[in-house]
Length: 291
Image 1 (spheres, rainbow, N blue to C red):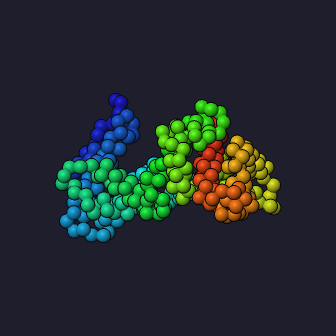
Image 2 (tube, one colour; image 1 turned 90 degrees about the horizontal axis):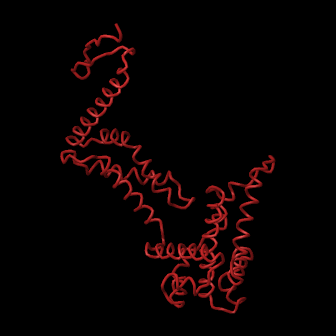
Image 3 (cartoon, rainbow, N blue to C red; image 1 turned 120 degrees about the horizontal axis):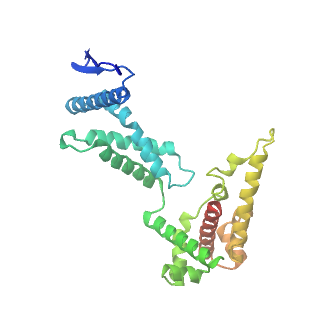
């Protein structure tokens, strides 16, 4: 006789009959898993019903704990497209508030799936927090991405740094409009050279790659040397004027007004040159790290 005969057994906590099967039965594992899944679903349904009636904070906290993995999942998806300095833990914290709001507003009686509704609320809460922390308007951020993509396309096609006239033609605007756009984008171009170096270091800042003075770490040293080489190569590919602006601003610590006096141009023009240089450096470092 193969297999074991199912033995009915009473489950006192739910007032139902559960079939207990010997492990020798090939269907034992799947049957047990199905029973557990059904019990979990029944427990969550009962929890939702109790919370709808009493609105008790303890019941809400139990629901938050149950659906907490949704927050981590959504935060990870949103964070994958953000700069390296954005902490995923901060996104998770914002997402928890979205989950609380979703639980408070969800109506089980409508027959909707909570997970789908909650993910929208969680994502919305995370994006709202990111926008609240960003001093740059969304329209300006969008225009900055358009310029970066245009620079990437042109330099990939031309195999050299694109001129302002070529960038303007690629964007379908005049040269004067491009320079006005650079002036608008100057608020988005404030970036540390560490962040540009970090593009080629797996998202780490240069401070995180510094070797311990008491310990010899050849790997970290080589990574730092390679990152600096990539940055130096990217700077060398800039136009002469852009290279001078980067050198004076980041290495000589001159202000934009002082750079303007050196170059014989206005401070607003220096802002445009600085913005253009940073955008080009960023696109070159991203292209180098992707190779």
